[in-house]
Length: 238
Image (cartoon, rainbow, N blue to C red; front, side):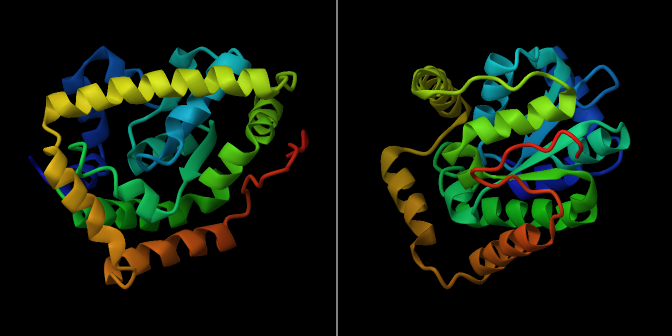
């Protein structure tokens, strides 16, 4: 398997994301930012991308075909910004993102995942003025604030959010997680013993690569002019 970091670096090159999507087929091409899209929801894997997408699709009624999403490539963020789309980038602390990628076959190792995390978020710095950063903690703690933000940006009425709706979305997410686990096993996830070993690679907090990634996340949160925070309510004039 080609290193995940290398795959992401290749996809970030001009024209390569489009070529990658064309090779993968119609579904992948439909995930790219394009003039017919309404918004873009992107981010590094395991950062809340699916949860954010599901909330917008189910509660705001935005068809998934009108949302650019899930390429996990900074190239798609650049495309969306260039097209003037409302663009949201999910942000999660690196340990939580990367420790699950290798066991399920998305990356060759934790270091491979961390290297890709570092490259993705370094490239994000150049786009901070043009995107909204959505921290994982704020997204999951107050999904209603996330939905109100998107609703204001697209001119839709703010949706209802309560415990029953939250339970319904959670059930959808669990079904999606099970499906992804099956897909991970099909593409060659590690045996259970190897999963445990790989998941333990991040137990040492002094890893230089992990510390660099954590610092990157902190810097993005400190410098981003547009960031969703738990309890926020969207400003329609923004």
